[in-house]
Amino acid sequence: WTKSKLYNGFPKPSARVVSTQVVSTDHVSEDSQHTHMLMQWGQFLDHDLDFSMPSISHASFTDNVNCATSCEPAPPCFPIEIPHDDRRIYTTRCMEFVRSSSVCGSGITSVFFNKVEPREQVNQLTAFIDASNVYGSYPALAQHLREMSSNRGLLRSGVLMSTGKPLLPFNDGQPIDCKRDLAESTVDCFLAGDVRANEQLGLLSMHTLWMREHNRIAKELFSYNRHWDNDKIYHEARKIVGAIMQHITYAHWLPKILGKDGYAKLGPYEGYKPEVIPSISNVFATAALRFGHTLINPELLRLNESFKPIPEGNVPLRKAFFAPFRLLEEGGIDPLMRGLVYAPAKLKRPDQLLNSDLTEHLFTVSKYKILLHLILNFFFLVFSSL
Image (cartoon, rainbow, N blue to C red; front, top):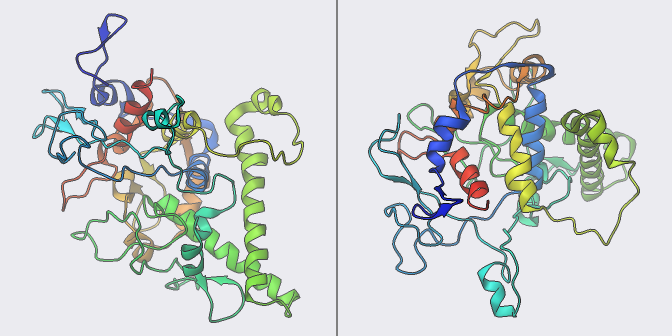
């Protein structure tokens, strides 16, 4: 986005203007066909597939000016202009936005290889549906998440709830995304196979559920195969979990996303094709799959076994961001899982795209006064390429 450049005779609006005037909404319509779990599975799946690598520098490559202190566009800094009449941000002229890292030999660096190739981003995850968000995408983390003392192929678990069910282990110094508000609680973030697990309570509940499912399967395998060693049980359980996630995605989730006619166009599965490049395309990761944000409700229901609200009540989405203490102190994951399968999904409408809790409160941390604006990043990437 260049402020002075005209497109078909007109300047493009700031991504912030698009966000506040077109995308953000305080009104939500219910989806009569799908529950909130449709959204939650989509986010959980997405975190198994892709995660762009941030720029190695947060300073301009030309003059080394910090991206957080300058409003001048100079790669990798692409600050987003804040309008003078913005309804919330009035202390700064721009919002920091730093471009993601590119694959060497793509974009501007492709000229060094005597070719011209479009810029491609680095995906930090395995691009297969393989439950890497449960087990980690690199060997060191995968090993760190394992419980080795029992010799039964288990994943590490943490505090037991009153129900006897475990939560995830607390983070022990691993580099994860943990923007919790220490003024609200000192309870640490949980550790899972993906660094974004603590982003919101529904997602954190899914991570907890699949850690438990791995351990349940591993215990079953051990009961039938007591001659198997630790690694054998772990890898067999891991393969089963990955297969379950694939089945849920292709047999249950994707047909609801594409619809009957769209799903039929895919045709039957014809087996593995080694000539197909399995990497995640930019158009899928940064645009197509982002539709899931339009399905997010501004509230997470927390229901008891009778599907009535628990004493602590439901959670506004803004209070569910980076709030791991709520699992520990407010009933665990069961009430949240019931809410996800009970509450209707948010209906995706052109006039009701993203609820304002997402556009205005995701990643807000009072201690540091930081807001990484989700939809700005998305629209900046998409509109700047048009």
